[in-house]
Image (cartoon, rainbow, N blue to C red; front, side):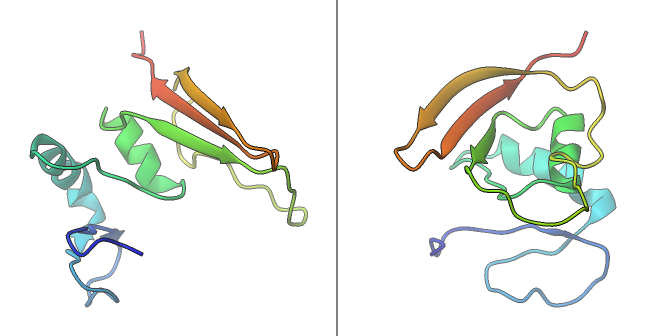
Amino acid sequence: MWPAACRASPPRRRAGSPPWNNTTVVRRAEFPAVARELKQKPGQDIVQYGYGPVTAVLLREGLLDELRIWLHPVTVGGPARAALLAETSSDARFRLVDHRAFDSGMVILSYQPRPTA
């Protein structure tokens, strides 16, 4: 359940009404500037669930403070393989800052980006 004060700003290719409340639609080209502006404001953390092009933009623009990978001891799928971080530059480096293991075998790994040289 999302808190009522939670605001979503999903980047989209097409204009249109968002399917849920408290949402501002942002064009992909405008997303880095909007994310930077949100990050400057006081308040709670910016959270993104899942990985893909949005994560790559946050990382490329220096807006990603922490990356949490939830590793489940399950494999699912077929022959297609998807990159964990789509469209991420090959020089992205991280340092492990925290980890948490559960009796189920699931592990949460928390990383912070290292500055690129």
